[in-house]
Length: 113
Image (tube, rainbow, N blue to C red; front, side):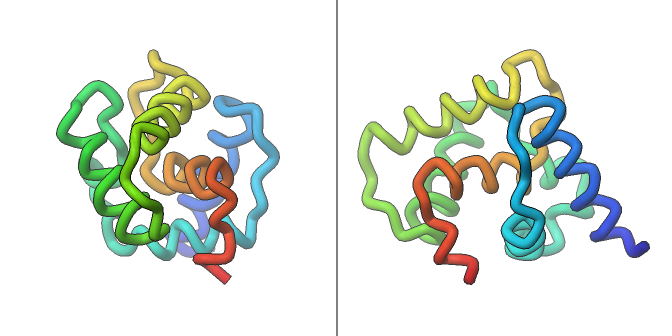
């Protein structure tokens, strides 16, 4: 099993155990691939849920640019809901898992088909 496959398996565990979601493995794989080399970097592979600048980056670079959503208060609400789902006390919020939850929240799976 390759490094990426190991990470995808770890992300699936997080979705099941920490987020209470049953992952769509095909979509999770595509979202993980979409994160690019960031998944292999300890700092870039996670989302710092307590840093406003990091959450703005998620909003602008992922929700607006990648998913094509219009800017509005519902984007930050969805990000905050994702933090709640993942668990505020959870230190390692993996970027691929975070993005997967947001894709599901907005019903934007077609972006990855």
